[in-house]
Each structure stands twice: as structure tokens, then as C-alpha cells.
Length: 305
Image 1 (cartoon, one colour):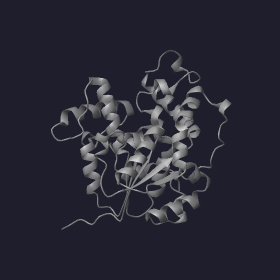
Image 2 (cartoon, helix red, strand yellow):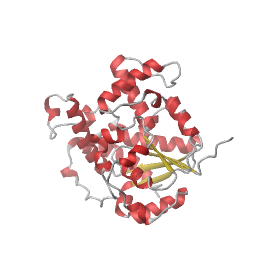
Image 3 (cartoon, rainbow, N blue to C red):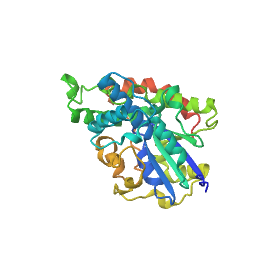
Image 4 (spheres, one colour):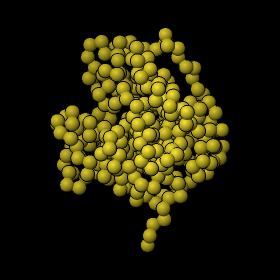
């Protein structure tokens, strides 16, 4: 018997600290909705840490490469403090799983840097609409800097001046994620999705707008993509239990990787928008990378919801 395709399939591409995990918690209250949590992000990160550890590229196809991918999963598990399943991080396995799901509503929350090049983008699943979640660089990078410092400190890899938050430079020290190019990667994927025909009119959603006007922005977004909306979506349980139903690279990664997800996982609403810091209040690394990402942010802003 043929399976019934989902009525709504979305990939929400983002970068860290763009309120994406809180959005996933919010939308999880929709009956019949299935959330996939950063599958390509973990595929790409596993490939990066594997190459750093053994000096070889990690194959993107699971069958026939089980041993290498299991090794990459073990390395990544040790970094994030949560078990990563090898058969969930191969690019080929992610594509197959996303194209096979039959849930009524499907939302994939993922990082744009997870599919940074043509080889990776060949595994983007068919049949999905594409949404790009963006945020002002100063807010996103200021938040990410704190999380990166906490994570790298916990790993014991920071040396010298980098061990002090005041002199820490995440643009130099961050080897886990390509933080220097978060905005370039998001913009590049947005352009690729449009030009390749995957989605000629992808949606751009500014998470600062969502925080400032949650009812207006979320209801408009839901109507546009075909998701049912009610005002009850604006409040959710602060418990992390919702993540138990998410499809993730590891059963508990959204709850265990506390340096990246803890605040969002314990949220119960969209918090009011914070005041934007002035340039003289910013650490040098945030200022430098915010300036580099601004042109990409401003181009995406021209197309926002």
C-alpha cells in the first residue's frame, strides 16, 4: 500500500542562536507534526571532527562505510556529551529518512553549514519547502560567543589568553563549527535553493521579528506554509520532554548538549527582544564577525516575511 505524503514538509535552515530550538518547541504542539533536529548539522560536524582526528574524509554514504562512520560518531559523542547514532549521521541516511517520512506535518530544523558544498547539497531531500531563519549578527554572535567559550572551556582545549572570556576570540578558537562563515553559509544556501529550482521562493524569517511580535509573525508564517495556527502555540511547557519525540542524531542530544541548547530547551515562550548592544560595547571578535556577516544579513532582510 502506497504511503500518504506529508501535507507540509519544511526545512528551516538557520545558524546557531537564531531561536530555532525554541521555534521547534513551539511548533511541536501542532498535532501530527514531526520535528527532525539538525540531521545535516551533525553529519557535517562529524565529518569535520573525523578528519581532524584521523586525517581522512568521512564518506557520505553509509552502506559499506559503517566502520568509519561509527568512529566519527564516537568522536562526536565524546565532544557533545551525548550518544550519537552512526546510522543517523551519514548524509545518504539523512536524505533517505527525510524522503521516507509519512507524518502529516514535517519540520526539519537544521544548520545551513551542514550542506556547504555541492557534494553535500546533493543530499538535500526532495519535496520540501525551504525556510531561512536569520537574526541580527550582533545578537546572534554575542550569544554564540558565550556558548562557544563555555563549550570549549568544558573540553579543556583553550590555552593562554583564550581561557579568559575577556580575551577569548571565538573566530580563532572555535574548531567545532564554522562560526566565521555562519552568515555566508546561510546566504549561499539561500541563493542555491532559489537558483537550483529546489524552491524558487524560499521564505526568510527574522527571529528578532518573531521575538518582537510573536503572535503576528508566527500566525503569518503558519498561514503561508500551511500549518494550523492557534494562540496557544505562543506558550509551551518548559519541560524538555518534548525533545523525546524529535528525530535527532542521538536520542538525547537536544537535552544533553546543554552549552548549546539548555536555555531554549527550558523555554516556555518567546522572550522579549533584548536591546541591541552598541559597537563600543562589543568584544572585538563579535564586532569583527558581525561586520563580515552584515552584508549577507542585509541581503536576506530584503526578502524577509
